[in-house]
Length: 220
Length: 349
Image 1 (cartoon, chains in turn purple, green):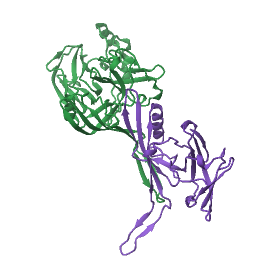
Image 2: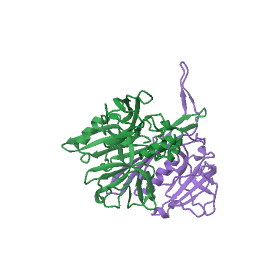
Image 3: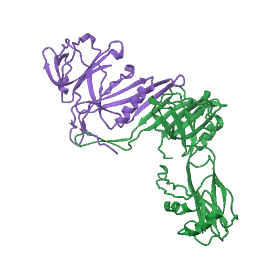
Image 4: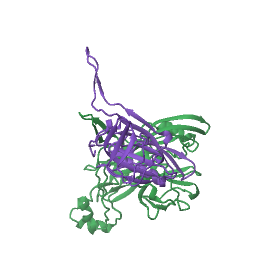
């Protein structure tokens, strides 16, 4: 896969493995605190105004190197301890018009993304060309969002220009890149045996979005 | 005690490098440091020189049990050890009065009760550690003698961990899951931000699978049911099979494999390998000394005792596990299926 990634910030690790799309689930976990006191109405105290996504998915490996690379990646993240980025392979946005070469803005049909706009918002454009090795993944940080309520269009401003013209019809997936950690239940390898030394392993795992930056406590 | 070796360097007694045993296993927090001095040769001239050494009683005028610590490490088959009883008194005969087994399950000692050892006389006796028995071997033999001094009670310590080897290679396709986990504590601070801390900076694996039992055989399977309480099992890490180059692995302490190690992971982490000959229904676990990726060579601490033919043998990294659950789905004659759940344990053997 050809990647063009900028704007990930201090945590620059990104997992760009393509998951099994027939086994890909995105859940939104609502955040908030509900308190009830006797004799008073229920009060809701929002301590986090953003939902949190949990992605459950699997990857299939047919060679040992890729499998070990993935296990090593998980091990390097110390399981659920350390954060990293992943594309949320969920088509969320649609381009209104092409993104011009050397442009750093994209017009999309409104999804109220501006409401979520904070310093952590990143997007990706995945352009599939029939062969993964020729396909492209472009990642940018969003620096600003301008809303045109009349036309229901949002203009996204990127931290960096794109290096080529991108047509709406060639974009396979246009979604968000999430800062996540692995789920604390670890990763699960389901092994299929065909012949000796022939490997077919399906790795299931889940990722939990981290809505705000924080510092994990290193070490034991 | 190392100094002893030096002291005796001018005699014909040859000293063996002191050995340190430590961090025995996770079931026993005690750390044992044990130094032994090993006499390898002896002669009458040795006695003459020893008289001239600085402190005669450092070595002579004692009763030696060597070794007085037997570290079996992993017990997967019956083990026999030869232990030396040596009377280094010059003029006193020592007689064994009694032997008491303290906390050693299914460990036998040759009966040397009432046996007399003349001055400067040594003789070996046998200690047998059976593969069946409690999971942990951790105890000692108290050997009582008629010595009136410090050597009326001699202690021979035996330690080890009994492991059941399970050749869980023929899992039913798609039915084996291996879960990797690193225990992490997750809490929230006052701003509801996650705080995380790893408990053990090392992965643990859980195995859940269904496998055919014809490879184990019915007897082995029934034994397994009887022995599961607290027992540790050694299973092959079936994702990384290796095939030997040599025609037969018997008597070899190093062998080559056909596979390129560059894409292997667990083989470099494991302490033991699991060797499995499917045709001969034979398997063993061997301690790995080194894995040479350049020459595709595995070196073992000891040579392999049994025959493992190239054409039907597979070599795997071995994982030590405890059995979480075992559930036979169907047993008819020798054939059937078993659901099994295992959890990796860390044991420094």
